[in-house]
Image 1 (cartoon, rainbow, N blue to C red):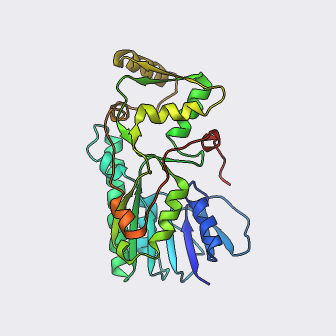
Image 2: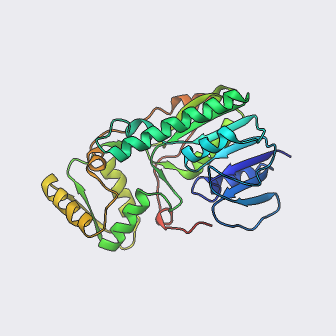
Image 3: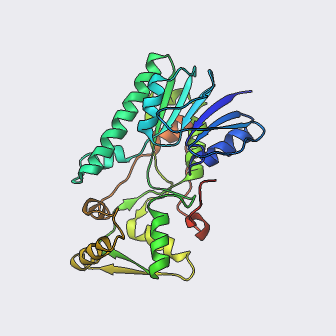
Length: 289
């Protein structure tokens, strides 16, 4: 029986990946910061990267579905024998590299160093690694963008956007990301490469938000404000402790196209993401299971 080691196993990508691995008959060692009960074929380790005790000596595949930098540090010194590694990073490695926000630039740098570290460690031990860079993730009620928008809109009964928030987006469902990670295992062409894994539909930021609001009950109103008025509203929200994670750089990106080419992933491991079709259950915040 094939054996997989999965980091971030209780997260929004890790959970559907666990389900897929179990359906395919894998034995799984899953890592989470919280304690979870074992199940037939599924053993949980409690721990946090970059340190981890109790990892198996050998597995057939390692998946990293959590923070890439911590995984890269662990993998660089880990003694686990494994021929195949699939790790998730983010398209933020490109999007935020030249950001005006110093914290965003630092994030992009950590992602870049994490990718380089995983590839270098894999090469040093004769393993094959693939890096997957999702776009805007949704579907499990645990993302920091669309679920956050749904929560705020439900609380306020409206959601404000600056006029001209028409930058293109490609939201990607967690199930499609889990399928992509699993598909990489059977693809020799994906070894040693990094791929963008966007969603199956490209749409304006405003339309993306409007679709989220349309499935909520009661349905909040989308309010488009002139930039000066929106900026004032944002300052007031930040001063009151809300929207503290929405900075000037993030607002500017609402008008910028963030579009990535799925063709390499389609060619090399049959990546076929779904269009952006949502329902209210996708934005219900769930505690870590």
